[in-house]
Amino acid sequence: MESPFKGDVLKGKVALLTGGASGIGFEISRQFGIHGASIAVMGRRKSVLDSAVSSLQSLGIPAVGFDGDVRKQEDAKRVVESTVKHFGKLDILVNAAAGNFLVSPEDLSPNGFRTVLDIDSVGTFTMCHEALKYLKKGGPGRRSSSGGLILNISATLHYTASWYQIHVSAAKAAVDSLTRSLALEWGTDYDIRVNGIAPGPISDTTGMSKLSPEEISSKAREYMPLYKLGEKWDIAMSALYLASDAGKYVNGTTIVVDGGLWLSRPRHIPKDAVKQLSRTVENRSRATPVGLPTSKL
Ligand code: COA
View 1 (tube, rainbow, N blue to C red):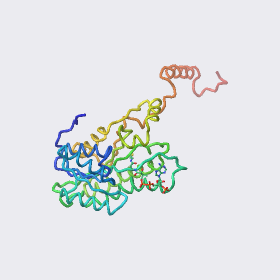
View 2: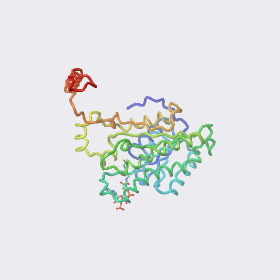
View 3: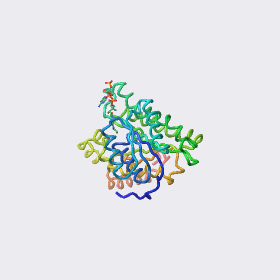
View 4: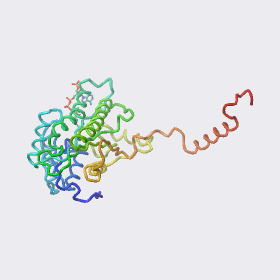
């Protein structure tokens, strides 16, 4: 789909994306690049990085890949510094790296729980921590008088509760909390905007194939009235909005991009039945004035 944004909304910007070589992260990399940004992607798998970089370069996007694990502070530091060395500065950090699998709490080892928190929550904090020096107003290489942007990819799982996702729910709740705390503190002190995006189920992603295999998602559609799959493009467009000047007054928020799915509830009474039921109850209460003891009627 064509972008509704002008092609130069991110002209001259440098973005570093963890998990930016695959899935939603890659689509954000691609759209940021198409709209003028230079792109550095970070990931653990060299072959995935290489193919992402050549695909970005084939679109004329200045792109580079750095291998690293967000769980390792030395990797985070090295990748942030390499990005600045390569492109001269850093304007945007996108934390899209995530770990996930379905598991019931009783089958999840504390190490499994910790692993996902290490990637999603601690990894996000570590990247922000290492990038601060370059993102803050007046940081090395920054010609503009404003600070940069941090974008954290979150989820909606923890707004209520989600089956078999206790680890990811906890991890993303922490990510949302980081988004708000950093928006407050680094927004005030360093002019850095910090926002998040909470995607719903997005087609053609690892998350979707891991968490909602086809047979499960078609069943879910039956009882979730708002059930619709989103596209990676939907998330990338929200990211573009937040990263461009259109989002310059947005700080500390996590935009839900899920078609309203997290609000879904099974419809327990059909619409026609509710009309009838409601009238009947209404008429009954009119016939029985409230507050009058029934013995007086
Ligand atoms: N069910 C239950 N426990 C699981 C599990 C599963 N499907 N997969 C991993 N674990 C547990 C392991 O058993 C281990 O715990 P233990 O030491 O107590 O046995 C712990 O999690 C770490 O697993 P390990 O395979 O060593 O971690 P890793 O660092 O190689 O991989 C994951 C991290 C598990 C998060 C892996 O799924 C991953 O790399 N994911 C990245 C991609 C991704 O998930 N993207 C989805 C985005 S929505």
